[in-house]
Length: 224
Image 1 (cartoon, one colour):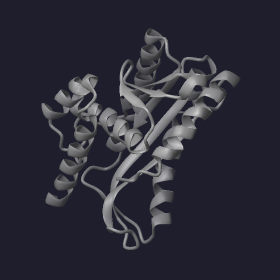
Image 2 (cartoon, helix red, strand yellow):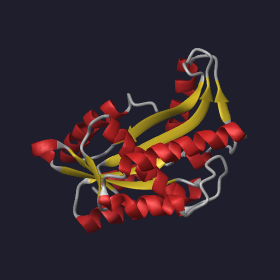
Image 3 (spheres, helix red, strand yellow):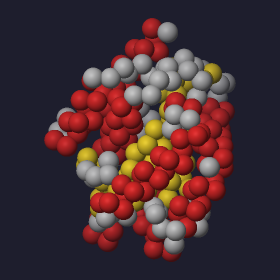
């Protein structure tokens, strides 16, 4: 248990440190530092919501992808052709809350007039206080990917209708766990998996989302 808490502390510290040079990150950092941040339990908190924003921001920065804190939550630069691309970040605490969170994210995108996606973090849908033990890296990756796939499929109706009517370009889902895999170095570390949904999106949305995915592919190589 102490080891899990230490990993939580390191992850939180890294996320905060990466955002210190962005003045608009102050509110997210405040929420983290003033909340119960026991990540291994399943309590809902504004701090854990904010950590998802900070963690994703850090990963884009590690991949040298231009990103900033701005409405709705994060804005990623897709270059001269596509410009700013918005990311509305949502934590999933239960399957029952997904439709409402999706609607809130799309409303944020509409309000601020930027094309973009809704990004769900699934950590709090997993059993608490868990370390994922697998024999190989491939087995761990397959298990993480299956977690994301099941979430996407169980919410396929919501996602398809939302994307088809143009409320967002697509959905991003991400799962982060503490893993114990003998062939990995170090064998105990933070592991992540990310998946996307853009079924039934328009042709313009697909082109924008493809440009975002090109940036995302760089981010996915950042495992820490």
